[in-house]
Length: 219
Image 1: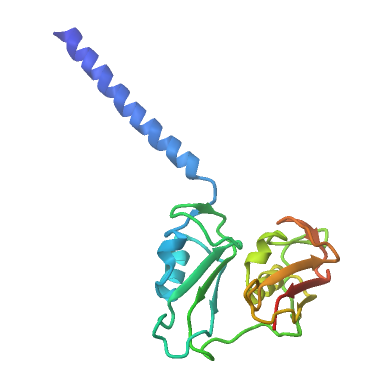
Image 2 (image 1 turned 60 degrees about the horizontal axis):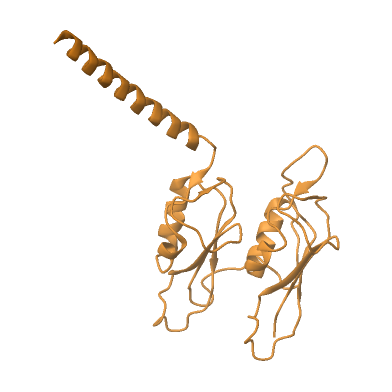
């Protein structure tokens, strides 16, 4: 009888120890400095953009930008403020609980009536009078998005992400190549060059004054 009770006690203690070990392992696995996406990209669509921005901020994201589309005239098909698309570092397809850096570049694009939003982008050029140079001892800064991913951004978002990173010589160049706009959309980025480089990886380093040209399709 005593032996049976002892075995049960040992088994119970073993189960308790295993539960604590499992919990500790889970905590260590998630102690990586990343934050979880509160909703999937599909679940964010058509919700009010203020609600999505609040949820992203509460989740721990700190680099969130809103982009009104100024596409509504009457507002029958889409509601004012309804989210059209959310991108994370240029990607518009992600799962709930996907893990990202807290400063991942997030753009919330939403339907709005023309004139509701103010664009910070000039069609000629974008320059910052007092640029904030993030980074570093060697006088260079990291580009925040790759040459492939930046093509998924709008022109406005591309300019914002580059100037926010500290680049001070960003120019946009409309191509005037559209007639109907079936193959390409107005404002769709064709190519971005950084000091002549048209292929670059996220994190590649350049001087703040690197000449950046964003070429995009336009009428």
